[in-house]
Length: 140
Image: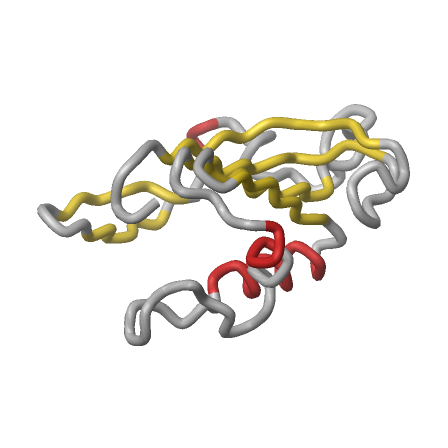
């Protein structure tokens, strides 16, 4: 993107047939898509983006580890990653992660934070720093 353009991050769900996307088994998947309207990539570059240490950036500007680590994580979770890119139009990377199993028949066998009343939830505090300020966030 060379520092300019629009980057869109979207989540969703998909129901896939076996082998519809890579080696995905049939079932429900959660999707995370990252789409930009940057310069795009040629097919020979797009083929290599998941290789460790592959980068199109100048020396000292990046290590080329980001997409290879995402690829490894998604594979470990038995999901898939797709990439679509057109030079001059941008790139779309979509992660397909296995969705939750079918809903529990009744209550959870072990009460979790979703099942307990709010008064029984326990929270821990974490500090989240940004470049211009600090804020406290709650996490279960």
